Every structure is written in structure tokens, then in C-alpha cells.
Length: 93
Image 1 (spheres, rainbow, N blue to C red):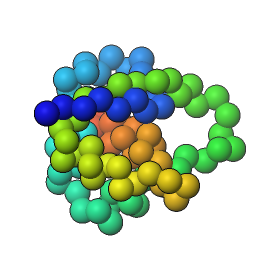
Image 2: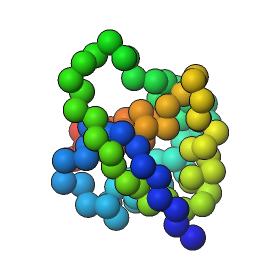
Image 3: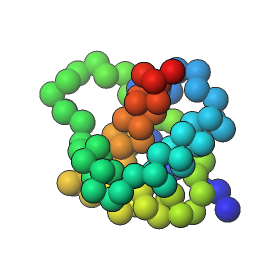
Image 4: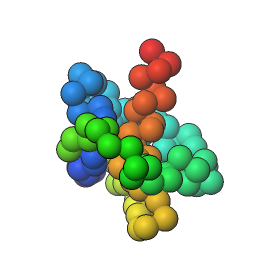
């Protein structure tokens, strides 16, 4: 079962097809430990204006969404986490 989340991303206009986005995030979240995910789930620096963040929908399996939901709250940012996973993948292409 797939569920959609809406994040704020710098990749909204990057042309990564929705299915590819889902596959990237699913593969990386399943491969990483909670500690690794927490390290990259740090909120973005609010003092950097002009980031161009836009809404982006990502469809994820229930187990991946459940893991991501652990990183909600003031200490972490799910949007930043997913955005960084996509940025890492984009750099490796």
C-alpha cells in the first residue's frame, strides 16, 4: 500500500519523475539506519533566503512512511530529509 506525503523541496522542478522519486527515497530509507536518517533530518537553515522550496508529492510504501514519521517535530524535518536524499542521488547521476 502506497501513501503520499507532501514535502517542501528544491527538486519540485528538477524533472525527476514521480516513480523515480519514490524508488530513490524508498531504497535509501530502507538502507539507512535510524541514526543515519536522524543525521540528515536536521532542519534547514532558516537564515538562507531564496531557496525556492516548492510543494512536492512523494508516494511511499507504508513501512518507509512509518520510519519517516519518527523524524517529525521541532528537532527534525521530514522535508529536509527527503530533499537531501534526492540531492545525494542527483549528485551521483
